[in-house]
Length: 467
Image (cartoon, rainbow, N blue to C red; front, side):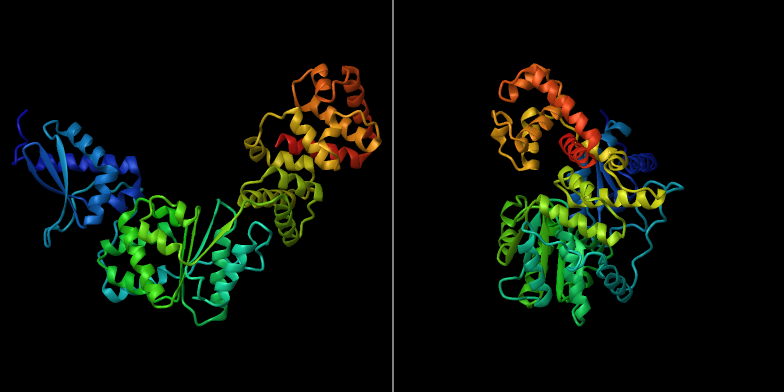
C-alpha cells in the first residue's frame, strides 16, 4: 500500500478531528478533557502517524489506556496508516492550540490559559481545603467490638498528632464500615482545637490534582502546599494501585511529612501487606506505624447504630423493625443507614407509622436484592436461636411447651417458605408423620389470630428468613 503523502496535511487534520470526536463520544467529555484534549497531531512518515503530548506521564497513560483504540481509529480513517506513535513534545514544540474535536453545544467551555503562579497557589490552597462532613464526628460514631480498636487509635491521633507508633495511622476494612467517618472525625477534632492545618482528600483526588498540577506547570506549588500541612489524610488508597507515577509522588510526600514530624492518616480496603500493586517501599512505609482494621459488624452493633440513628431522627421506629433491618442488611453500614433513612423519610412524607409491612413495601428493591432460597435447616436454626432452645430439640421427642411451640413455628415456616411436601418436612423434624406437620401449621395459624405479640414474632422470623 502506498505511503501517506506528506502533502496531505488537510486530509490528516480532518481525519484527526473525526478521530478526536469519536474518542470524545466513547470516553465522555470529562475523561476526554482530562487525558486526550492536549494531544497534538505530529508528523506522518510512511505508514506511521505521531501524536504529541506535553508530559511523559500523559504520554504513558494515553499509550496504556487508549493506544490500541487510537491505532484502530487511524487505520479506519486512513488504511495506509498502520501504526500510531506517542511522543513527548520538545520544549517550544507545542503549537498555539491542539488539533482536536470541536466542542459540542453541551460540552463545557475549554479550560482558560494557565494563571499566574500566585493565583494558582491560591486556587490550590482553596481546592485542598478540608471538605469535612459535619455529621461524621466521634460523638456520632457508634462503637462496638468490631471497630473499638480503630476508634481508639483515631481518638489518639486526634488528641496527639504524630505520636510515636501512630504515624502513619492506617485504617482498613470493607466498604461502609466507618473508615471515612473516623477520618472526618479526626479532621473535625483537630480543626476544632485550632492551630493545625489539615488536608483531606481521596486518593483519586490526589491523583487528579497531581495531574492538573503537571498540566498547569504548577507541580512545585502542589508539592509545597501538601508538604506544609500538619496532617495529611488520604482516603481509599487502593485507588493508586497501578498508577506508578502518582504512587511515586505520594511516596515522596509521605517521606517529607513523616521526616518533618507531621501526621499522616490513610485508609484502604485491605491491610498494607495485602495491597498488591503498591510499590514494596510504599507498603513498607505504610505498615511502619499503627495499622487498625475494622471488622464486619455484629448484630448487636447494627442494632446500636440503628437505634442511635432512629433516636436522632425523632421518628418512632419499632424495635421489631430495627431487628428486622439488622438481620436483613449485614455487610454494609451505609446501606443499613440508607434503608432506615428511607423509612423515616417515607413516614414523614405520608404521616404513616413505620411497621414491618410498610418496611417491606418501602424497601422492596433492597430486600429483593437479598432474596434467596430458604432451607428447613436454616429455619430450624433461626427459630431455635430466637426462642433460645437447642437445635437438637427440633427433632427430639420432648413435648414441653417451651420446646413444642418453637418446633411448631418451625414446621409452619417450613410449609410457608419452602416447596417441600408435608412428609418431607416431617422427616426433617425427627421422622414425624405428615399429620403432625398439618396440626402444627393449623395451631400456629390459630395462635397468630389470637395473640398479636406471637404473630409479630412469627412474622419477624419469616421476614428475616426471606432476607
